[in-house]
Image 1: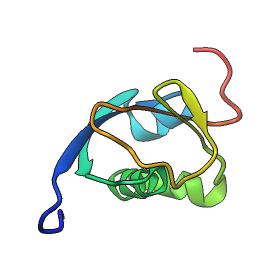
Image 2: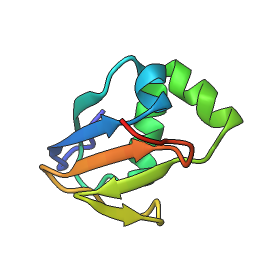
Image 3: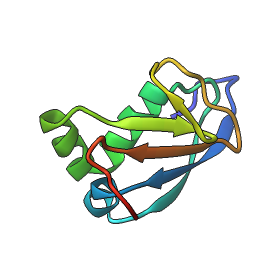
Length: 94
């Protein structure tokens, strides 16, 4: 749900390796509220994909890059058109 006065932005999420298997997709476009952080995006994805939520509860390690730049802080704010790549430290190859 979008709070009054807040618009939506669209981001592209790319799931790599086991995360693609877990979610059943390699690419997903999402409309999310403005000022959504990387951490909030992961929470949104966990709500949408129960299998991802279950996996993260067991293995909470996930690597994130936004527009090709690795991010270590979950507080990074996303912007419309951002490309977010989610992978695990276990990911090797394509």
